[in-house]
Image (cartoon, rainbow, N blue to C red; front, side, top):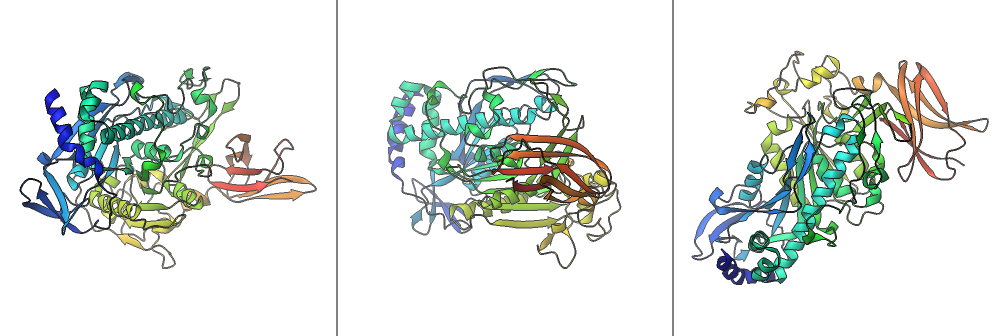
Length: 562
């Protein structure tokens, strides 16, 4: 093996001199050609169709950080092998369009869901590699045990971001060295595994400056947060504090601190190597969640990354719009006591629809692919559509065919017999949001899907509500807005500032006020009555600074006190 690597390093030396790739070929038919004989072995749409046989894909692995232990949903310890797989086309073939060789291939980082691993998404990674992408698949921490407390969501996200940043730092440094050092020198310095990884990077012909995240569920959330929150200041101070931050509640005390900085993870090989923030070109996020809109802030972001969100409207695990979590519920326990004695009792989780609007409002391109009536696991029931939408997003990004700050909406509506029975569980009947409406005034063109013969057991929907046709649905947002509140505004009365809103029924609501740096300045739990309600704003709120009020995690208002 030692001599094989030394010889191969000489053969592959020329690979480091490739020019920048023009991606205008995407969508066109290219030829797969034998490098030695120039014989055409096949043809297809590179990066869109399966142009490679499984035997023409090579896989190597590299540890990007030491193994660690997390707790699973049942509180049991599980070892996480922080290993990254690299898939790439065999050097025995090349891709030609006419007389021109395609010399660079984009990189897709496939992110597993929940407590999965690189093994659970290996079939998806292989399929992308057979389409011609260079593929990275890291196993990373996705510890959901701490999400038993809703505040643990931040701790879980933080661990995922730390691991993904370490994986990308390792990839980027290894690529740099593979392009500049002989493979034999890399082997002598860092060992056989590093040399094999460098051989793969050099032979892959990857475009190391055209990298995309693609993930489902927890993977979609991990990819989005990693693309968005690139500075330590993007996270609460307690996460990397050296002192314990112990929260307490029904499940007992849990420390959610002492995690180190966002780049504290990784092998000694990448110590001091900066996170390559500029190489990420886009994120494909199939379901996503954030706990606060304050983090959707690109003001000091060195590389605002466009995102393609894909989400079903009946998702109960990660809500399409938002979910208000009060006390203990199926997702997490919102009631927790902080080290300073303060208490939380309500948490809000926001989904892809409002997040996509916030991303576009911040001046970053976003796509929102909606599956009307789809549950959390229903998006994989339409893999061809997911693949098509992903390809189109990547094509747009690589060819700069998009407009910053634009929200591109694509809406699909399942055949009635394919609607998720999660819709029934929301309010005992099927529901839809405005963009899914059959009303002629709907500004967004909805694409009706034909009946789908479902092959995936997890996607077997149950039309238990007796839906007859698309238009036999509950009206626009009835189950979300009409039972809650509207018209959040600030009023001044006799020199006193108030937050005012109209409530459509008597209910408990949470009102929060944040400063622009994300610090919570006020939090009040109020039993609002039917009709007009007012809450006096305290004089202690900062003056002449932008403040953001949140009502029940759905309505928000920006204001400045004089």
